[in-house]
Picture 1 (tube, rainbow, N blue to C red):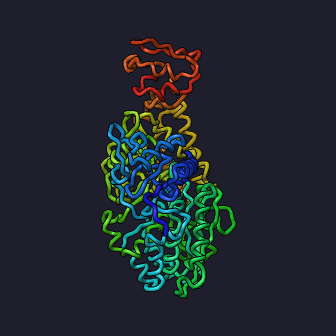
Picture 2 (picture 1 turned 180 degrees about the vertical axis):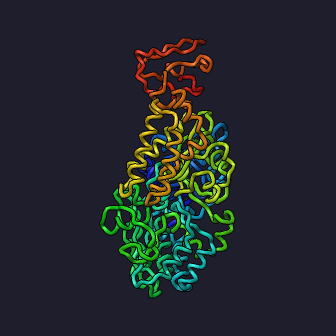
Picture 3 (picture 1 turned 135 degrees about the vertical axis):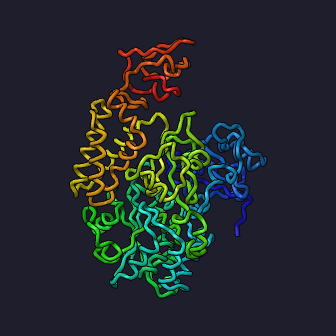
Length: 595
């Protein structure tokens, strides 16, 4: 058995791969060989580490030393200092925002040490393409217990006791859904995994599939035993090639080990799974549209009832859960439902995975206990807002969700509390916005998305969202009129009450929450023809406010056409004839002095 004095774990999730982590791996291999250390130091490619903003990154074990934002030219010095001379390279380590001291160990970085991992328990620790590494961390023990020691009813009871709710957005109790399907009549049943995530800014499912595909497969095996299904489908969007590749490898390995296919673990239970690649339609995230797509038809939702638990895929009883939900199942069965329920709140148990993006210092993938204050996520885990700007809002639930303002920063993050604000938990997208974000523009952005992604089957969604979008475009262009806000609210309520599926029913949420919390911005656009966030191009004057200008000259330095005149200790002046309205000066001014 090979023994190494150190392991270098190289993050190879999509984010780090895009920023050059595979080149870092090659450079490490070359340098270790050059220094004759290839037999002492092992390099392991892992899935997403979580700290996406700091990639490419590596973690050196057993000490857990964290190196970030690496470049190929850093590697020779890093290898010589760390692995030959035993000295840490502080210049390549993480320094928290507004602090000077570096933090060497990953476990001590606030981004990591305030998280609690359940669905992500293997992230950044194993090679996702090696089943033995998953098994070494208790992989497939939950499936073995479910198949060899438990009845379907006992599995369902354990899941119900855990309090696990569907992590795909609706938050329906997972055990209850499984129970409905288990009791439904039918010799043929299906279990499906939704890996289609289409929310802007969301990458939770993708990261889990890339880092720990066997956890999802094991969860599906357990679910299949619970409901009596022998065929499963993984619906993954085609834009996730790395996730699909690792899933294909995982399925092949599981079949080779007798963990998928006929007579799994000599239990007498048969179960196979197939990957179905989605074409990128947002509406196919809705369960009935997803099933229609797998059937080979255009992905459009079906009226409910009947619900999929009774008539789903090919009109057979079916269960659909998302990637994160299935990733939790193996540990629930292995450790027990009561163990899982020790985290969270009374009605929202366990943990939740979020993709933390936007105007936040620590962009990445996080997993936190249900009930954690939103402020702790934004400022402690997320590291606060860059460039000393002010927090304005966080969008939760994607196009189906809403914007939560600063006044609600101390709410607990659970299903009930988030819903009370007008947003929803959703699948886990969390987009942070600062004072430079126009809330009318944000509402327009999300409505553009849902209007474009509407399947067109029902009139309220097809026509209603278009009318709302036209009105928002008028407001942002300075053409808003008195009564527009009330019209938007009336249309929104009508669409919510009459649309066929969840896409249409929730599409107005971003508009309703921005009106609720930022009505003054709508009124400024309509009555004053002014955008308080200095964002809407049609409402910008491109003039420097002498009272706000700090005479720093940054705007003049970044102007691509030299349209700004500035001298030391003088207020900058914009030449409107030269100005091309690119907004570079506005985005670079920390004092919002350009109107």
